Image 1 (spheres, rainbow, N blue to C red):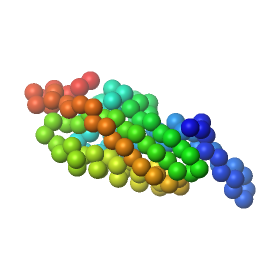
Image 2: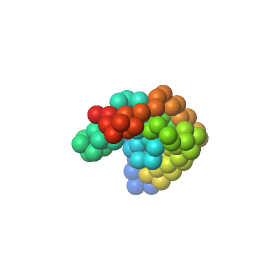
Image 3: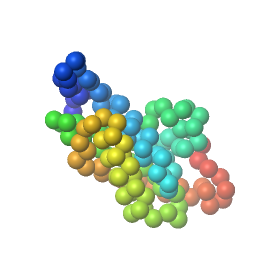
Image 4: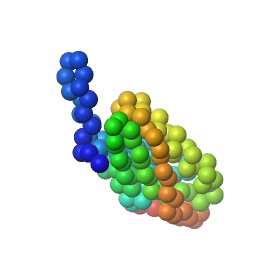
Length: 126
């Protein structure tokens, strides 16, 4: 895994750090309806308070020769379709990375590590 992606352009070099790609993936994942939080313990409420910072938690990115492999670990809301939420995360993460960086996303792996049941009682995770 490299720390930076470098491309030589006609007028100069473009570098994209792995952490930037991981942050893009994290932001895209948390925006999908049904995702409670990334496994890195970042809830939607905390995201709003932090201004979407530190969203690489729960995301692992490997970039090789312009191809990206993303692993996202997250928690879903109780009552949502895990399959639909996971597919939504895969599509949104792939689209966000490709649109913002120009890199090719080869695969997005989603690990559902928990279910948020706090919303059943009207309480949100903090």
